[in-house]
Amino acid sequence: MKIIAGTALTTLAVLFSGATAFAAPTYLSCEFSGSQVFNFALDESKGTFGVYVPASGSERSAEGTFADGKASLNEGSVAWEIDLAKNTIIRDKRMVGEKDNGTCKSITAAESGFEE
Image (cartoon, rainbow, N blue to C red; front, side, top):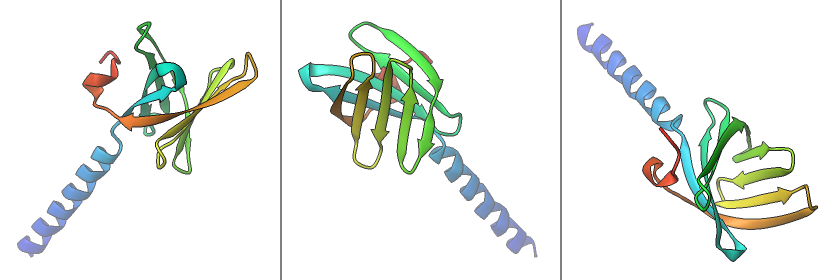
């Protein structure tokens, strides 16, 4: 019985540690034409979507939406939609009625520029 109980506890520990790793934030660097770069911190478990602009040092975070492998944020004048499977981003510049696309790559938390 002790062996079975020990095995069950080990299995549960592995499952929970995997769930914790999966829930970790995702950091992306996305580039648009004209070499505009934006870094993002996506945390589905907390429902947050962070935006960092390396050129200016501007950083903000708000409640985002996560569904169907996509993360999105509506900031009013600008809306973002990142397709995590395709590593693409759409920026809807609502204040001027334009949309543009970019490509994203995974980066580390240290590379992201977000304050810890």
